[in-house]
Image 1 (cartoon, rainbow, N blue to C red):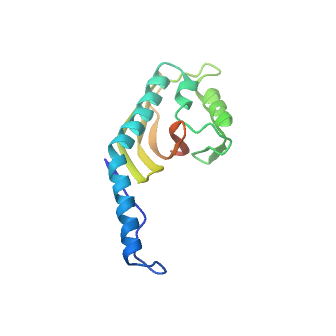
Image 2: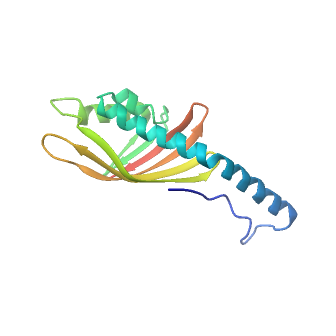
Image 3: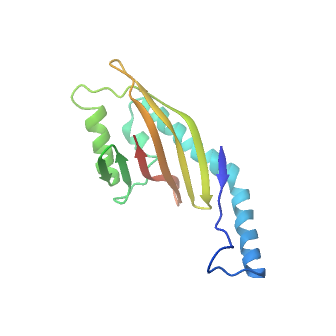
Amino acid sequence: MITCHPERSEGPGRTGGFLATLGMTLVLAACASSRPNDLTAIRALLDNQVAAWNRGDLEGYMAGYWKSPDLEFFSGSTITRGWQPTLERYRSRYQSGGHEMGTLTFSELKIDVAGPNAAIASGRWALRMKDGSPNGLFTVMLRRLPEGWRIVHDHSS
């Protein structure tokens, strides 16, 4: 599922008239023309993450994230900030001390394009492992950057 929510021109403190209508028309046109390409690009990013995870390639998995100290990853009661600390968190939980990565799947994906450079994706994640099947929900905020769509905030439970 994909939707687009451009800013609205109505409401308190907003001006109406020709310029507001023209602005809304331009935003809607930009949104409508980018939706199929954005959906494809964001879906490819998520599919590439799953493929990288399932071949044991954490760096490949992390390629879907914004390589910045401002990346945010929320999980349980833990907040991790930065691309490198997030990679290290994944390594310690899934590649060190006999831990296994398991097989990752995403399901019930919903992608909501919030504007020409912002989107939110949500769904379920599941790992199939020898000793269990952890699973949960996720919501990621994505931004269109010069290198393409990247996850800038991940909240997984």
